[in-house]
Length: 145
Image 1 (cartoon, one colour):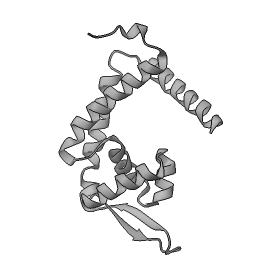
Image 2 (cartoon, rainbow, N blue to C red; image 1 turned 135 degrees about the vertical axis):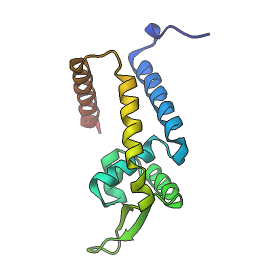
Image 3 (cartoon, rainbow, N blue to C red; image 1 turned 180 degrees about the vertical axis):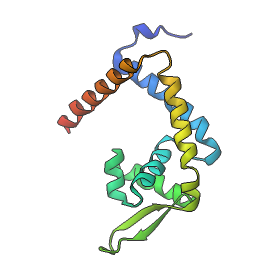
């Protein structure tokens, strides 16, 4: 039996929507054996070229255990590599491998397909308002941390 979404509280509805978005992404990234957060790691490293694990975790708002697990899996899969920082040998820098760089366009394409599906039927102004509201929610939550 399916419940009426109008009866679900706002945050519950947000959770349902995010779950559906994540499931869409998971099915589309499956050919690379990646999930949404791992695709985000790939894209972030592509944009920044090299980062420490701590910088990456902070950038993606991921916990140390989550980022460690994702990085280990991606390293085993050949998508990223670690190398010592030239300035501080204690710090390991993360970089894309050739394999990781080769799937960036697919990561972008999947993100765009999901974006198109999510915002279908909405005007550009509605999408901008939605983004502004998400940024405000994020700012509100950051103040409490």
